[in-house]
Image (cartoon, rainbow, N blue to C red; front, side):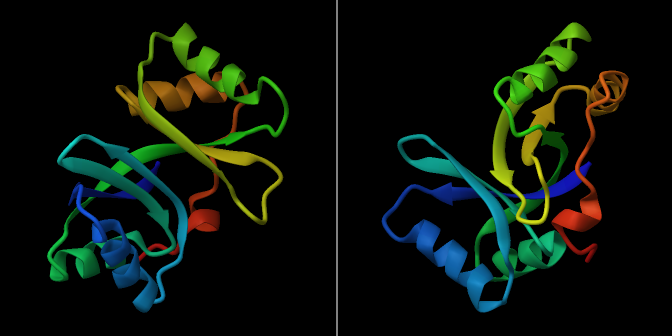
Length: 143
C-alpha cells in the first residue's frame, strides 16, 4: 500500500494552480495527479515524494487534505497489461473504486494506482497472479 494525498477542492479558477504552487514552492515533487470533478467541487488525488509533509503544508495553506491508502501496481508496458491486473482482481470479486496511472521514470513498467474495496484480498489476488506491487520506496520517501 502507498499513501495518496487527497484534497477536496473548490472548482474555481486558479484553485488547482494554488494547490500545486504550495507543493512546488516547498520542493515537493508530484509523481501523479488526478482530478475528478463535479460542478462545484472536485477531488484531487496526488502521489508525491513526501505525502505526509504535503498534507501538512496543504492543511496549513487552507486546503482540506488527507492521506488515503491505495495499491500501487506495476503494470507491464504492453497491450493488455492493465486488463490482466483488473481480471485478477475481478476473479476474486474485488471492486475497483477508481484508478489512474503514471510512468515511473526509473522503472520499466507503468504504475497503476488502484483504490479497491478489499485491499488485503486484492494484494493476495495479485500475488497469486504474479503481478507485482510497486516498491513504496521507489515512489516516495517515508516522511
